[in-house]
Length: 481
Image: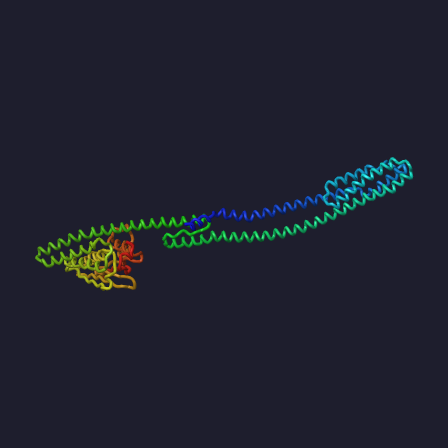
């Protein structure tokens, strides 16, 4: 019980299996794509920041020292070209330095640009100090010892800043290329792993689906060939395939029950036909026999009358057969012998007969009233249609595992057209003629199979032979009654 529960618990739908595979493949890919995107965005932001710093630093006047030194020289010597202190140049340098301080992250670069800012402040102070000095020599001395040195340092530190930032930009570019190569290698490896995983899972899923379906196809092929035995449903891990197998087995079970029901109904119909056949034979036969007995008594042939009554008693005793529908060949022979004895007394100038059935065959069984309709057919449709005395022969023989019985008469026989009509009447229900032969033929096929039954052979002016073919069975348990 626990194993059945575990087996049922493991069943999943086809869509859930496919969805699991999709998630197992899609989630790692999404994570990798997200990581690549974040890494790329981070590198891009860093690269743009450094590039902006380099661009901003490039806006710094490369002639800053020469311009400031010249303007300060004109200012110190009080030249006609003097436009005052070059505070605008210094202020512009401070603005650039402040922007770079706000966006710079590397220590070396930040140290250099901070030095530029401090030197600009010092340069402004020195410029104001010169402005307050009135002595020419002192002003010149301050110009040479302070201004020229400070402007040279500012321009030098700005160049140092550019050098560091350019180096950082190049290092970042190399790091980006190296890391992107590593990421691409990781993506390729991960893709190969995911592809292998996908193929493995797909193969397992396909086996879960295809293998049970192959077995279902084999089952359907067997059903198509007539195998209607109800089998346990094919176990599958996929719910849809399991439902398909369960549905097929339920269908086979329903079909088998319906066929069994129809078979029982057909058997019941055959029993009814058999009873009808007996009802048709017995009263007619009994009336004629009793008339013959009366005629014998009136004629003074008491011995013949007694013999005929004895044969009639045996005939009906074997007809009843204790209610059995299947009897031995020995019982059927006694039944036929009683029938022929009675008919020979009635038609002593019309017929003679011979029964040749080996004792080794008399233990085998056959449906009751198999031979009597054939013998009656030989008498009434064969011998009575000719003017001279006729002969009926009943023989039996074994052919491999078959029991072959033949009823032969030397009557007028049948034309090929009439013979074909009789053969057709054996299988066509709507034919009114040949009721007795058709009933015997179909009862044999129902009990033993479609390969058994009657064969009719006839030659005009020679006679007719009816061949009964049945398997050698010794017990009614071996056949489906």
